[in-house]
Length: 232
Image (cartoon, rainbow, N blue to C red; front, side):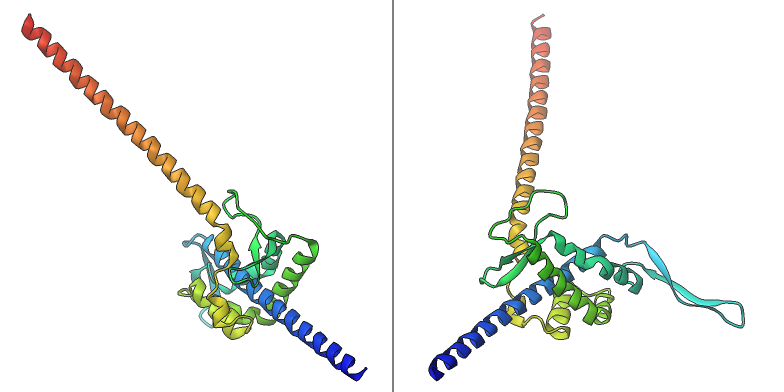
């Protein structure tokens, strides 16, 4: 009886460790997707757009200590992005990455083109899991994330490492080396774009051929006219 009890506890503990690892994998994937979504939101802003910041209090000379700075990556802009960023996960699904680990993938493309999806889990429970992980990250680390993303020279790779590895500790360096499944799903879009480019090249070649043929016909007609005049 005691042996049975010990084995049961051991199995339960191993199951707990396995589930904990899966949850950590999901949290890492959600963190990376969150950073990517914020980074994309930043890229949509007109670089010329500015916001007035500083102290609006009037000093003894009647002046305000304010100045303009780019709206993109400003605290106001990033705060607005984080207010609704977790809603993005309504269009995400659970999947596995190239190493077989738990991950997430968008179910809709950003440019409206088709997207290839396979081996995904789309359900209300999956959506709740992803949104909960996102909301937890934002609630606990929003200020830290704003500091990182507010720097103009912060690339996506740097943001991932600082936010998902260093600040939240949701990912390891090894985790970040595995491409997100979104890249694999985007392969369909990339292939479509290449096909469109090929079609454009073919159209261009056809047009060039038609123009070349027209010039040859024109030269041929001029040659015929010249020959007829010489015969006359």
